Image (cartoon, rainbow, N blue to C red):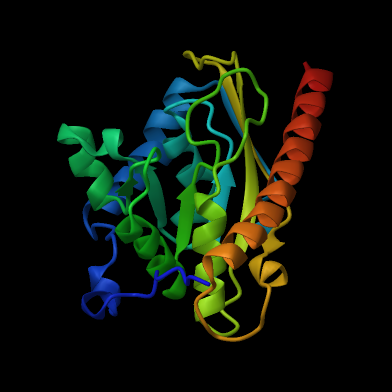
Length: 249
């Protein structure tokens, strides 16, 4: 029986090895996004369910992915002005190229190849949770504008399960997030709503309470149940959101 080796490497035991939020660029970016970019572009930005956002402890925000704007809207709804926390985005390797990549890396982002995730990227996500950071992982893996929840990738669940299994009583929470744009392709003076749902507690999906790395079969089985529940919650959240918005139109 094989064990998934995702334990932190000796050179990455300390927080300064993790993806960093620049102490000068991050507050500027948050200020511009919250005070100028979003209110200047959108006619309305609505937020529902912020009471579900923890102000401490390891958290994964699991949003539907509807537009490039998502990575500006989510910090506005859940970042430092709301929870006092900076967000660490897991993004595709294609997004960290050139000037955009320079900004992403300095605003807490780190890359993963969604077609073939590396052990290093998954381990980095585990370390962020073990240092009680708030991460953002788009579980659908790409942008979809049809307002349907698409099949979720298992990487989010694997990271959360291994972090929880390796650190006693870590308390990882996964929060479903639904984004809705009107129109579906965002345009000037359009509307956007962010809805947060109740968190899932990762420890309830562990096959054992022993403080150890999980076997490959344990990860596969537990991740399947966790992803099924997350998909169900995201679908319910998205459906309720659409019905509420369409009723108010």
